[in-house]
Structures are given as structure tokens and as C-alpha cells.
Length: 286
Image (cartoon, rainbow, N blue to C red; front, side):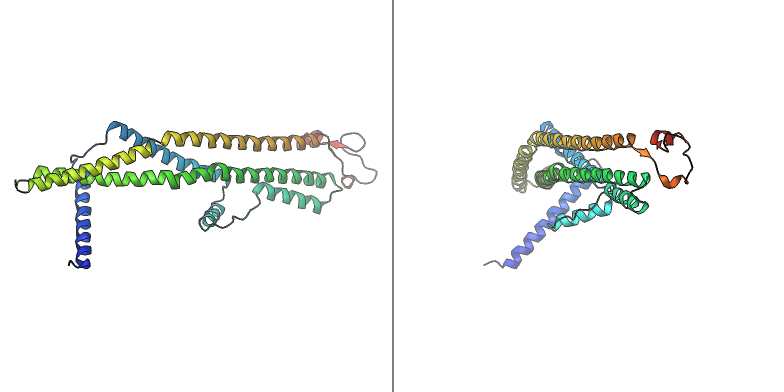
């Protein structure tokens, strides 16, 4: 009975030999332009399309995340929380923070003054904009970024894994071809040719696996098209809400008079306007 330890050693030795042979073959191809088996044109096109899809999807996901959260520290926090499946805490947007400053400033200066009142009004609008922004960010992450990232981590990762296996099988096939070409002993030729046939069969099977998986990429593109349309709709809705809020604020500004009794001593008169009132448009002329 053969010792299991001996079997493990032989397997390790065989794996090490295969790794060495692949390294030699790869180096020969890269440095001295050694012969190698080329993938057929259909498979090569499928691989190229899949690689482009992977690269650009990664860039789209990364840049969209940067758009939605420019702060790299908060992006890192969200990533760590997602890895450990923890709830991501909500943070106020910069716009909401500005709105809070406006409101606090208005309260401190005094809402009985025109400036304080306008600060309060602007603060409410900025917080409304910030709330819309936060909702857009949350929805876009859930309905656009997350599905694309899931695709990269599942279907695309599986395709790339099978592609790496195919590359390994291709190197083994070329090593076997070179072994047949260099065989000078007729007695060893049948065994070497049998090894070549085994490598060819394994390569063909793996190529078919990759072909079938990567032929689904156009279907993935159709799903991504739906996600992109939804992202555009979310963005359109967000900008529409912002436009409505700013239009409302602008309308309020045009109907607001800048009168502040504290600015005019008793018995004094304002520089312009009627009844001590100076409109915002008039103030802008000074």
C-alpha cells in the first residue's frame, strides 16, 4: 500500500513542475516571441468585449461613487460597513450643513431683521436641497451602483476566473506541443503525444466554457442599460426638485423688501426707495 505522504509529495512535485513549465513558456512568448496557440477570432472577440465591459464598469462605478460622495473618508467608511454588513450611518450633506449655518446665523442675528429673515429662508431652502441630494445619493447607490458592483463581483468575476483557467490550459497545451516537437526518442513519442491530446482536450473544454459564459455579455449590457436609464430618471427627478426649490426661493426674494429699522436712526431717511424700503434689486445697484 502506497504511503499517502508519498502521494502528496508526488502531487506537489508535479504541480511545481507544471508551474515551472508554464513560466518558461510564458517567458519565451513574452521575451523571444515563441510560438503560442491563438484563440479563434470569435472567442478572442468575446474575451475583448468582456474585458472592456469589466474595465469600463469598474470606472463607471468608481466615478459614480465619487460623484455621490466626494469625501474619500466617508466612501471608505461606507465600504468597510458594507464588507462587514453593517448599516451605513447617514451623514448630513454639505448643502444641509450650509443650510443649518444659514438658519443659525439668522436666529443669532435676529429674525426681526431683513437679513436674519433671509438667512432663515435660505437656510430652509438649502436644507431642502440637501435632503433631496441625500435621497438621490441613497437611491442611486442602491439602484445603480450596487447592482453594477454585484455584477462585477459575481458574473464578471466568474468569467475572469474561467478565463484565467483557460490561459493556464493554453500554456499547458503549448508546453505539450513543444515537448512533441523536441522529442527525439521514438519510444517516448506515444506517451508525449498522448499528453498533448489530453492537454488539447482540456483546452477545448475550457475554451467552450469561456465561450458560453462570455456570450452572455450582451444580455448583461441590456440589464445595465435598464440600470442606466433608472439612474438618469433619478438624476432628472433630483434636478427637478432642486430647480423647483430655487425657483420658489427666487420668487420669495423678488417679493421681499430689505427694510431694517436698525439701519436708520430716528428721523433719518433711507438712501433710496419709498417709505424707508429698499428692494433687493435696488440694493444690488449700490
